[in-house]
Amino acid sequence: MDWRHMGSWGMGWGWIFLVLLVIGIAVLVVALVGGLGGRRHRSDPVRARRGRAREILDERYARGEIDAMEYDERRRRLDEDSEN
Image (cartoon, rainbow, N blue to C red; front, side, top):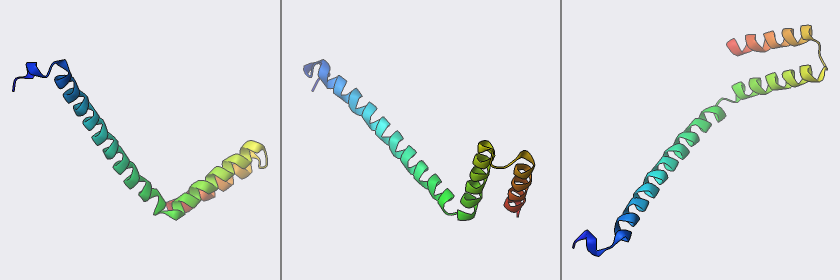
């Protein structure tokens, strides 16, 4: 069978299918990598709590609930704990 008998649509559909296939594979790879990366963070609850503690400290300082000296002291303590 000669490609000229299919007209211009035969070749066009082949290219569309190829592009959709490549896009689908890329989406699948991104989803798998994102899913595996997300599990790493969930498996370390201590690190997540420390990160949340730092966020709370930053928020309290931004609202003016604590002064710079207290902020620096508490941040230093959190950093020391994260090193251990």
